[in-house]
Image (cartoon, rainbow over all chains, first blue to last red; front, side):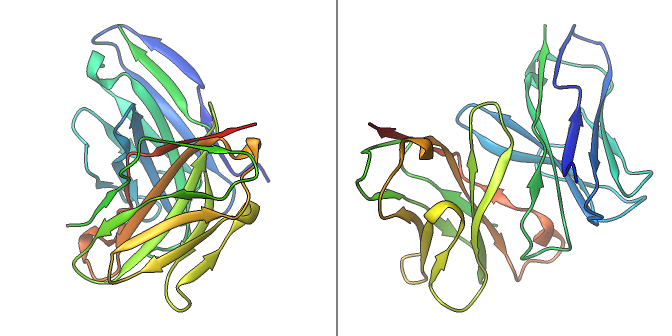
Length: 113
Length: 117
């Protein structure tokens, strides 16, 4: 049981480049989330999904897109990376909220030059 | 709207002493409250949660938290700190009465706990 996994672990991009972050979970969770963590800011929700084929915006969705084609996978895309998107990105999953805890992946450290 | 405040950026405590990490929250209805811990270069790990019932909640690694509705607080406590408890701690809240936003968990900015040998 791997839990929540994220690939890649590290990435450096140049401004304007695109990339996709992959999150996978093997706990059969319905809900999946993408957060970004910045120093002194805590975690902020980018997008989330309540089930296969569904996505919704979180607190800071601009500049990001997501897809949930399979229940176990949640992809986060950056179409045209900007230095402001330099951050650590965490994926999480959970059973149906509101009272179920989220399980987090190890994170992806992204630097945009 | 829901919000969480962790008033201390850093807490230092001597090994063996009791520790407290503070958290206050604001919701329009009743809250679900969570504590998570983050070790360096790792994802967040769930410690404990308050849903309803007993105001004192016990969690992993000997941690506990006390829900105080009148003070809108949910402080994390441990009777005897270990060096291995040194980490970043996050409080989080969800308002159970919110509609479309009910899936969103709002995190505090985190408190760095340093346990000194």
